[in-house]
Image (cartoon, rainbow, N blue to C red):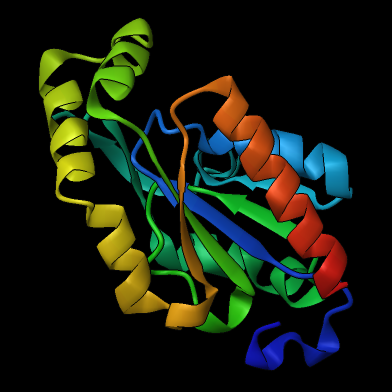
Length: 174
């Protein structure tokens, strides 16, 4: 586990990736299998008003990273959390024992985002992020290389396999 994890009895996992890669589905399945707490940052930001307004161009809240980190600090120190968010570079490195970057084929991703009703601009922006592996690079730059893993997430079978493999990892880390 992470350097500061000696206080924690259970690991913390960050599941990140471009919107539409299956973060919430994977996080929910993993939380159910491991009894770890699933924290969806997008929901937390809305529920606790941890944002600085709405970004018209990107059609999302402008999260206040400091407020989010302040809100999470105590529970992250306890351990046993799965954090689900499409960004990762503002979270303290000490919080996570495993950083999972979900990746999805562009045609699959397009279909998922289109079904969500995203605008063509928002779909294009997210597809570009996936093509250029923006989230994987962000994770590699922000966290120790040995805790970052990239996993395919094109199908339900991938999600089930990923949740199973991560459950095995959690069982070995506890």
